[in-house]
Image (cartoon, rainbow, N blue to C red; front, side):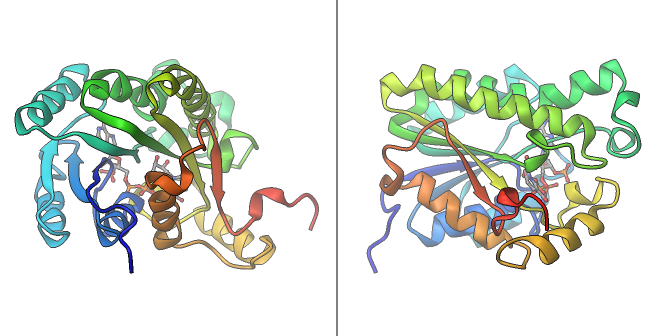
Length: 257
Ligand code: 0WD
């Protein structure tokens, strides 16, 4: 079988543990021939990410707190020093305070709103700006989003607003970076039980709704999303940019069921 990503290097952010969507993406990217750079937020996640990085074939593991420009710049310096050029970059990071992910959206605090948008959306802009100098020609940047960006999903609240901003950032970045051959896309994944997802109030109901009402009558797996990441990282998607690719068993197309 020809390796779709042979000779390419992919940086994957947002691996926290084995259930992280980013971990499945890293696994599928590696299985299709990519060399990996995995980033972790801080000391809390470092040991697990180092362990998973070793399992995935000696990935280069580095710290990057996307809430800090200096941390992203330090990552760039490390990549420059090692002579690493990035053919693919996956942003798989989001954060909102747990109390903002339940109850009424209008209860969102000013600083909770700013924090959610900073970590979950602005960070993609900062990553693209700071890492641009280590992008390979025709690099593919991908960000993980969710339907709550375009529909009001109970409890998703401020994270829906952050995902709307993230998707808009994808379009503006695609417009900016296209002239250098760089593509920027989002994957809108269906709900998957991960540590972050469990913070959303009533998450089990969301899973049940998709299983019952999506055209394919099932939920998606981390591997479904990983396969889409392989496609977007590969030359098979060479003319696709600024796009939101739904990997949700078709749930987003449904009106009344
Ligand atoms: O249903 C789901 N799980 C969906 C998730 C459906 C559709 C989209 N997504 C999105 C999320 O919003 C996020 O953008 O996919 C992305 C990955 O989410 P995940 O795999 O569900 O969540 P998780 O395994 O918790 O990984 C997210 C990680 C954080 O994990 P913890 O559990 O430690 O909060 O994002 C990382 C962190 O490791 N993260 C950061 N990394 C660097 N700098 C930062 C930061 N400032 N903040 C959080």
